[in-house]
Amino acid sequence: MRKFRRVVLITALFLAYMVNASAVVITHTEPSFWWVGMKNTELQILVYGENISSSKVSVNYPGVKVKTVETVESPNYLFIYLNISKSAKPGMMNIEFAGDGQKTVQPFELKPRNPKPGALGFSTADVLYLITPDRFANGDPSNDNLEEATVNRERSGSRHGGDIRGIINQFDYLQDLGITTVWLNPVQKNGPNTYHGYAITDFYAVDPRYGTNDEYIEMIDKAHDRGMKVVMD
Image 1 (cartoon, rainbow, N blue to C red):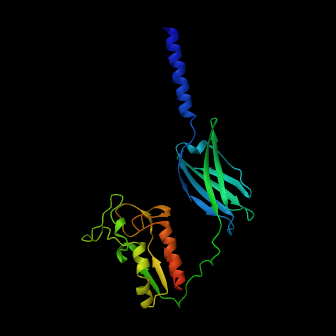
Image 2: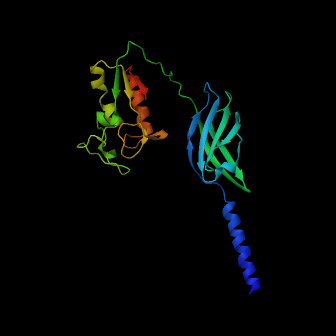
Image 3: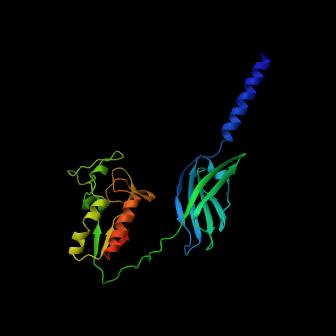
């Protein structure tokens, strides 16, 4: 009987050790990718994973070095500062998180920079048009009712269904007005019942009720094709 109890105790201790020594599970990174050839070579990455703060962080990628790693009060966050030199090439690098004999590898993509000219700014010669996307035009009704938020045009504080596709569809109208620059309220992910855009929960993702990141890029490209500018709030 004593031998059986001893086996049970050893097994329990082993399982407890394995649970505590399990690899970190990373559930979120901001940003989720970056570009090579940026003027500022320093990049800050926020990483979220349960009890990740005790991990040792390393990167083995040509032209990229870990400058410093900072923890905060919560053990579930790390801020990683990388130096991405001018010699770094586009590709998929791995950020490694090691601790207690376990290792987690988080892929992180370095993209090539867009060869198109950068932002040109605006001046007193421009005519700006401020748009609250939810209130402007509904170009895609399929994204009206998502994530517990439904369109209700009877209530002033509810979502009314405007989206990025609606803005794209109205470029002719805007140009006919003489508009040279559209200025959008934020279109990033927001709380479920907000329409104004100023309750951002993810700075790197377009709210699905407005569309997708690809649609946002499409909107900017089509505006530029018309000689128009886009200001991001």
